[in-house]
Length: 216
Image (cartoon, rainbow, N blue to C red; front, top):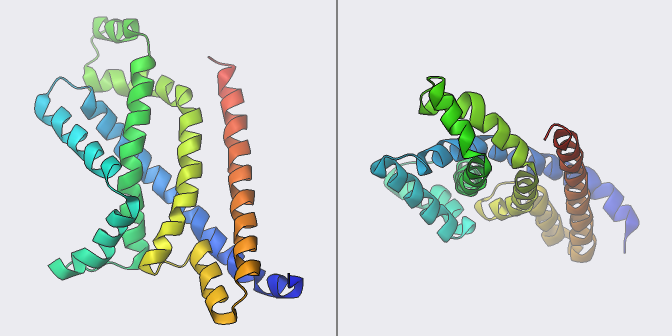
């Protein structure tokens, strides 16, 4: 194991790691927004809206993420829509994340006591006011554990964007490996960086969960 080589290349890997975190944070933020909308759609009484939300989650949960990334980066240009690797990565990851977040949030909404829906109705709140003011704030407290798991899963899944020329941690490691033939050193270091990031964020979500549980 060439330690000096690893230290020399570490700044490049750390830069890729920063991009990995950036992609993950943006993806989870946008995916949560999409997930909230879809979750609300999936429990509405309107068949068309509910059907659209169900179709969306069926497509994005039922097809591989790498296929979706390829579609946005390689297939859309054939139709005249060209994207940068970063844009394609964000769109592909966010749409995929939104499908999973929708199910997580829907599960959280369902777990809320139905009496609160009835109380909101008695107070004159419409459906969307009930969701915004009463139900969703409680839902987000309940879903912290699965959201944390989704964040960690997405952090690792960002490695797939290396297939569409997006430079993040995995692509940085493979580029250096291909140029220097130091595969063991680079892949081992990349694995350690992924472990470090997942450990740190798992700890953060664990702390948040414990703090919120005091108010349960």
